[in-house]
Length: 307
Ligand code: FE2
Image 1 (cartoon, rainbow, N blue to C red):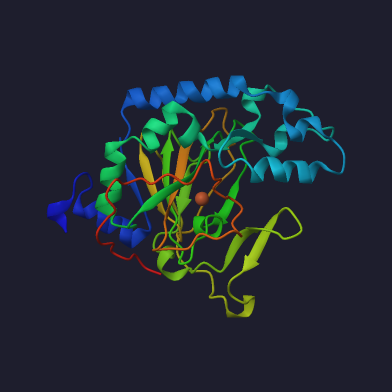
Image 2: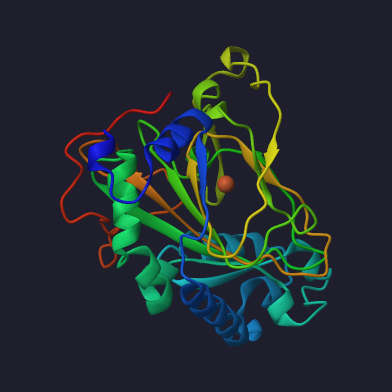
């Protein structure tokens, strides 16, 4: 396998397969990081608070408005707020640029700077070819995660294929810190090898009556026990790339520091006929914006990783 690798080393490929994630130091050039950071600041400045549903509406209909704003965000650039940045009257309790939890989910399509890193990036394609994780991957969503100082919310243990489900599960995350990630500002931590022992037991879906929820794929009494092991905290530098297998368990703590923890992340899944992406998923492609393919020539062969 090693003679065909373009960017990764055989050790890195093996590490990804064993641990379910891989940190690649210095994947982005400093100038690329700077461009994405600047663009993030600009997007935060462009955030129009007046027209945002969670701050504009304060009635019991909030949830539906919020649901629509979320459910139709796949091909747009939208703003999702930190829970602790909105007071009970639906007003921001701090500057808008310090109130946004994340910006998504169509940055890779609609913002030229993020598009360049995601869809027009030969180095990214080389990683995809080296991993042989997908035959013909498509990018389906992208986000800047802000993890704001003091209030940046905790993300509890989860795997990504629950939220970006295909049959069989094929999600793969690309996570790129734009700033240093430390134990104090909510660096990611992973349970190595959990992608091999923690099957996808539920999926995040659009509910028939509106809104979103979980559909169980395995009856609770048949679900395997949570895998044992010790979480590994991965401190990161700006420009690192962390590849995240869709089944590996990971989490991040609240940002209790005085510093932001901006990161850009996007996900790929396998496309048909290799995997099925159905209409139950919260995120749906639209006729005008189908999920873009990453490779010009699909990988001839993939090497399955774990469950
Ligand atoms: Fe995740």
